[in-house]
Image 1 (tube, rainbow, N blue to C red):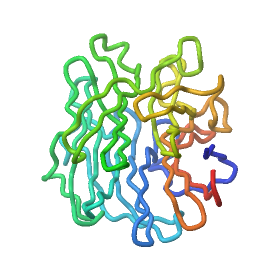
Image 2: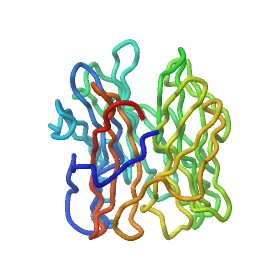
Image 3: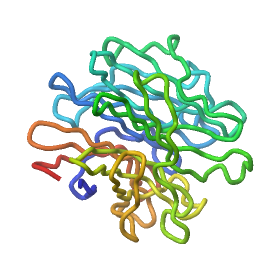
Image 4: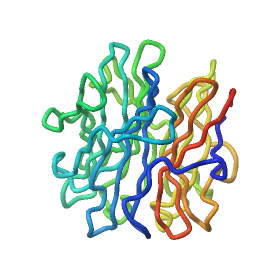
Length: 295
């Protein structure tokens, strides 16, 4: 397992400002053709833009990134953008799945854009693939192609009581083409009276032999919204995951700050970890660390 160690990390993408509410993070990384491609969300405080853009960038060394394009919330006709999912299909098509907030509600949906290269995503070609419904908001998908099929884990939020909409579980879906999805139920649920009692959101998944290892963001209370910490869950298959341990596996070294949205990508000689980390001043920045060898 790859447990984040912030003291070994460096800043990959700085935040767009200083102080609480300014964030760079929610990364999704892909390694292809000698490059690491990274999609991530940029955010300002509430009232100043919220999740105002998603950028796609590339890097030769995994640390210094060159932006390729920026997609704004206005282009996606959304009140706010959250974590994207960047995917390269076996057929060589690039996909960018975008989490979009519906104006004036707590509802979320996921749209997808396809392109021939990571700099070619056109918001005009976006289409909804995970609409959610009146009772459920869907966002922050983790999407993998494994064993000849597509797997998806998404954060699902109840909408019937607006004050409770921060609660979340992770549901699992499968697909033949990565576009039309069939829900298979809840893969990871909350644990009453534990550090993840209020919400759990899978951030990364690895298939290891007959075991599935998932990393997830968790919080105990509504007050910890935006400051989730990272936990680990394991299971015999991708639809059945159980959290392990009674404490988070990783968090920010600064007070009750968060460490969330872990993305793990294989590179030559090891793996790179990307995640969103809370600084001492409350700003969130996107950091990376290189881990050599196996987990």
